[in-house]
Structure formats: structure tokens, C-alpha cells
Figure 1 (cartoon, rainbow, N blue to C red):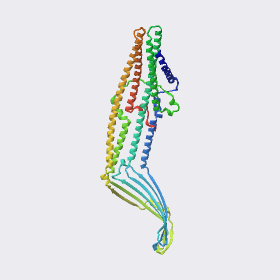
Figure 2: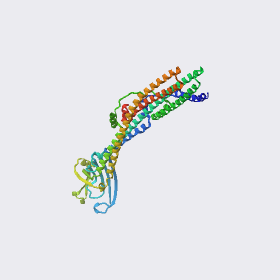
Figure 3: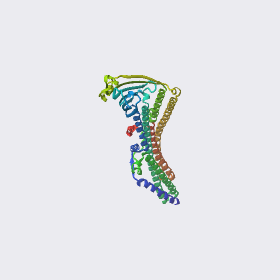
Figure 4: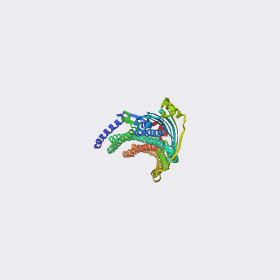
Length: 517
């Protein structure tokens, strides 16, 4: 009787917990695909990582600006007054006014050189004597071409920042893909673990109900004197133990549910985080042949971490190429062509002799100088080479040495990562095959446990066994059911782990990186 009274508090606590789980809270039914979609939408790790490709894309755009033409406009106006110190200046105070205008356009070219087009214009006005044109307007149209022939020559050197930015963009996209692969796997793992926790809870409920039925049966048989009262005590003990198992099973559900909610970040959807999640999908056993060689080929081809490392190696190889180029002497070719033009008011002197005095002016237009410059009336050109050989290029090889060391390091990292990938894929394939065999084995074990219990119950009905053995077989059947469910869940998780290992999770669900731009 004392044992019976001790079991009452446990019974009360059990019914409170079970009733709160079953009917006290709102539920939301989610399929596995629903959970994956919500994780892609709400998961904080994904949300943070989405920004990195966008930032890298901005860096690519910024790097490409080097090949956009640049325009410059300038203007200055000044006036000067100086005392005369020469009688030819014909004024006590020499006053001069200047206005300068310039426009230039420069364009970098992929070979490392540059093209520029410039237009310079000015106006000068002075009271100084013996001038032929005053005020005077001048214009010069000039073309310049500069091309490095050794150092700084080539497409790789001129496009270095663009190539690095594009490589970083690819790396950031593959990093996002890696986060998505990891998130999809975590969702699958948490979803199936929650499914197991709920199914395990149901098994524990069935086991408890069987123990209660046996307890009720024992009480009736004790009343009629068929069995000893000690059998009631044994049955009550088992009922109490299985009620405790129910509490543990419910705690496992809540813990598994919290893990899934955290991955899905349901708190961002108002009210949903307060509801209980009920998985709509059940773990199924679809036996598929897995070939290690095919899995390894897919992994080495698709895994984003390998792609990131290879892109990093491309950047290191570029750094070596540029560092070698920077060791070369500087040899620059420069070509210039320009055409000046001059116009203004022409001062007329008697007999064209300034000493005989000014007799008039012939008006000129400011635009005449521009016209002459654009007509290329006065042809001027220059061609030159500039050689520079800094001693630092001979004695200092730090950049090249560092670039080579970084490349060697990246190559070793790639080799190590490939070995880790092979090991991970081998383990994943082995785990899938092992879990497939476990599912089949535990299914047989559960069927046999059910038959043993059924046979033992028949023996009990005819008095050939005791309650103790029936309770043992009940417990064995409950454990067999739980283990079978766990093996089925483990099989589905191992399939998900293999998909992650070979990098196929996203393609299988038609998830594209472009969806997150």
C-alpha cells in the first residue's frame, strides 16, 4: 500500500505534463520542405552571409571604375601689376590680366597605358607696349599616349584589382553556398530528431498503457485469489518507471523542438515561436545504391569549400605574376601630338614699325584660335622613351617571396582539404550503408520482440509464466520500437549528411544562389 501511495504524486505530475503537451498549446504543422524554406528566409546565419556577395559585387564595380574615363575642368583668372623697369614697356605700371581654361579627358587602357585628350585656352590682356596682338587668345589641342613596355605592362597587371575582386565575389558566393548547405543539413537533422522524439514519446505511451493494463488485470486476479499481492507491487513499480520514461521523452521533444525553432528563427514570425511544431513528414526507408567513386567525383566537383580554395589559389598566382612584373625596370613609351592656335586684336603700326606709332587695330575673334587648333594647322609631335631602374627592384624581392610562400601555403591547404573531403565522403557513404542495414535488422528485431510478447501473454493466460516476464517482454518491445525508429531517423540524417558532403543538397531542392541576391 505504501508503494501505491508513493506512485500517486508521479501519476499527477505525469497527467499534468501530458495534458499540457497534447491539448494546452497551439500547434503548427510543418513539412520538411516548409522548414527548409523558413530557414532560407529567416535563419540569421544565412541573413548575415547574404550581404557578403552583395558587398563583393560592389567591390567588383568599384574596381572596374579604373577603366572609366576621367574628365577634368579647370579655370583660373588673375591680374598683375608691376612697376616698369624697361623703356620698351611704354608704361609706368605694367598691368596684365590672364584667364586660363582647360579641359582634359583621360582613359586607362587594358595594356597598362593611358590615352588623354586635352584642350587648353587662355586670354591675356596687357598695357605693355610693342605688342603685336592684344588682347590675345590662345588654344592648344593635345593628344598624349603613354604605354609601359616592361614594368606595369600587360592585361594582368592593369586588371589585377578587377580579377581579385571577381575572385573574391566567387569566394563569397561559395561561402554563402556553404552556409546554405550547412543550414539545410541542420534543418533536416533537427526535423528528423524532433520526429524521433515524438514517435519515441508515442512508443513510451503505448508501453505505459500496456503496463497499466497489466496492473489492472493483476488487481482483478488478486481479488479472486489467482495470484499473490506481490504481483501488484511489481506492476506498480513498472508503471512508475514508465511514467518517468514519459517525462524524459517529453523533455526530449521540447529540447528537439527548441533546436529546430532556433534554426528556423521562428521568433521573427509573430506568434509562431509560441506554437508547438508537429512534423508532417515521417522518416521513410528508401534504399538507394550509393557508389563511393561517384560520390567522390561529385564532392571534388561541387563542394564550395574546394571552389573557394581554388579561387584563392588563382589570386595567389596572379600576385606572383604581378610581383614578377614589378621586378622589371621601368621603360615607358610616350607619344604626344598637339596643335596650337592664336587669335585676338592685331595692332597695326605705321610701316609695320612699332617705333613709328600705332595707327589702328584689326579686330579678331576668340573662336579663331579654337578653329585653328581643331584644324590642326600647326603640327607638333614628340616621341620619347623613359627608362628607370630603381635599386630596390634588384635587391628587394619581398613581395615576390611573400607571394610564392602564400601560393605554396594555399596549395597545401587545398591538398589537405581534398583529403578531408575524401575522408568525409567515405564516412558518409559508409554511414548510409550501415544505417540501411540497421533499419532492416531492427525492423526484424521489432517484429520478433512483438511475437515474443504475444507468446508470453498467451503463456500468462494459461498460467505458464509470470507477470515479471511479460513486463520484461513489454519493455523489450518498447525498446525495439524506439531503436527501429531511431535507426530510420539515423538513415535519413545520414542521407542528408551525404548530400551535404558531396554538395548536392541545394541542387536537389532547386535552391539557387541567385535567389538570395
